[in-house]
Image (cartoon, rainbow, N blue to C red; front, top):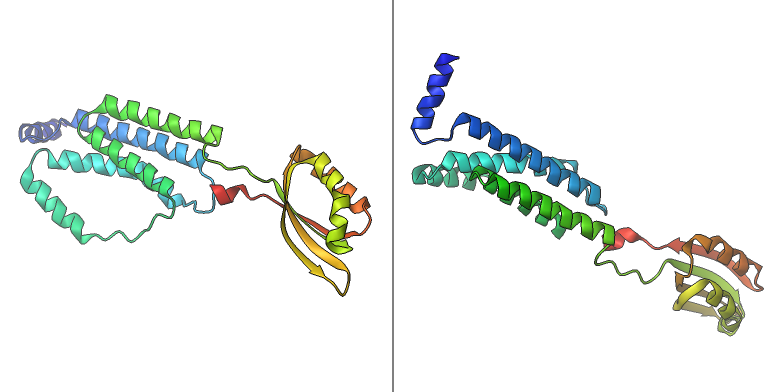
Length: 230
């Protein structure tokens, strides 16, 4: 242990960080990386989830902190590190701009910890994660225009749509005819509506009333896909 301490003291005399400070910085980078990763994991939506990307959010702050510690105002080491990093080619393309924001946050926190700006790193992490959670819970940026897409076949074609208006009005705040295909030979038509329901939990009641209406068949409902706006 004495020999190890002498080596650490010699390293400290050569201009590197004290090993206690280095361990504290790496531990803080590890903890803050976990905070960022858990925030990303909890607020993520969509189909682009990657377990390795979440793990990288934990690892990147630690790596970048080590990079800053290695440089330690040494220009020769800095240029050597730049040459080594230039050999590595990162081919992973981020499909979501939100992933890019989290990755940038992870790198910035690593820079702050490596420069011994511990308070800035901790406060910055908590502040940014709080903003992300706020955006998540308020669903900021979501354009909720329709709840379901209703499709059905109606005997009599477009002439029978007027009889359906009272039913749609009772259950919908907004009903927009999205498409129609009328078959003159069969005197029937296929119609599709986009519906903004007054109460989405009562969709079954709407379907029951439509099935009880005369001339309607082949009724289908497609729920609005929230992931499309993630």
